[in-house]
Image (cartoon, rainbow, N blue to C red; front, side):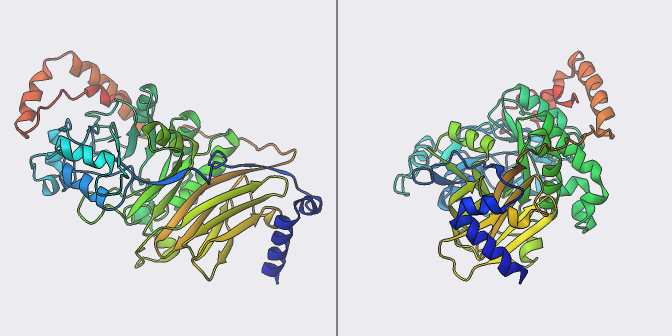
Length: 465
């Protein structure tokens, strides 16, 4: 009975906004819409892979094969993000760090790197064999840490920082700060692994261990160039509870005016892993500048073929992801309407957790809307939605919610003091000692590990915390 009443209220809100407003004691609302700038009639949806590895760091697949496979899989945008190794044009040898390759010898085999030929790179950029739909080459992508032992994995984009960056265990702030100063952006990767949530098997892990929520919320509030976090990557094993962490972080950061975005990555290292998660960017043109704007503004969706909490451990999506064709926000009526296809379930989330779920009978285009007034007691400072379908799960970015006359209380977000802080201080001391002693000979020792690569000097200032 309650569900039918909610549906009736929603229908009235959509058909008669003025009536809905007068009936809502809490309205009107100010609803922050990350897709507000999207022109749904003229902009295109571009399939992007922003986290993938080659045998240049800890993967088992050569560069040319990685690029060719993504091209065959229909990607529009590709960023190679090897550990400690800045992405280069696909026809050039990246500046690999042999120690990183040696640590993962079981995958890399220290094999000769094989870039694309100049001619083939040009064909891929211009869309030969794909009706002119070229694949955009994003260089200067990098995973900002050594493959081991650092647990603090994060992505860097659009700056020259990160080459040879070893990283400090459990210290995300140092690389975030350095990438920020270099003019780049960052995103945090598979946080459930270093926090211990993955191994705990406990959905309430982050409620019982709030230090992790504070640690990451602090970064988002203090560093605007840290754009968001990976909520689902790989096969969703290590990130099974990361969407829960994401909700806890949103509740803390939104009152401070920060909305970190939800990213999804394949994080592929081996053959057969390149299409298990990716992002879909709504952009007016396929350019690097447009991609950066999309990442910063949140005009994209995260998609993954595995969703262990929602679809079960044995589910693996097949086929196309759910496709959103329009999002309409009405602050006066307090509604958010999403038009999409190729999905069978839509789930709405807020601070309190799941607030609504609807199953549809057809995969054809369908519009589903949420009336905030109908869920007034359950909607906090935001709502977000995700779609479930045969292909997998599609994450829609959060919509902030503010009632008329409301001011959100800014909860203090402390800087978490753990062993990564003194480790950073020791790293600073090491940096001074290293740069003023004749350890340059180490370069030639390291070249012996990989005679195929002209090794640049590793910037040991990476140890500074």
